[in-house]
Amino acid sequence: MSILFLPSGSFALSEMDGENLFIKHCSGCHINGGNIIRRNKTLKLKDLQRNGIDTPEAISKIAREGIGIMSGYEEVLGEGRDEVLAHWIWKQSQKAWVQG
Image (cartoon, rainbow, N blue to C red):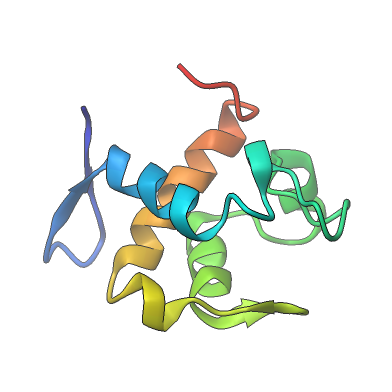
């Protein structure tokens, strides 16, 4: 298990926490990084970059505040957990959503 240190320095959460947040709050629409509602709004690196979402911070902001028809999850994620989730998503996009 790897530990994720976030810029705030106030806490460290495991990578597994990011995965668990994704499974609980995102995987219903973003199965394996895809998007069942808007096919060109996936979490795949190519689509993230094309849509100007090219940093974990940008992903974190969307997770927190929402974008387009997607609602924000700030209240359900809790403080700082949007960053954990975003770093996990970014890492998965770098690996083309191939686990391991």
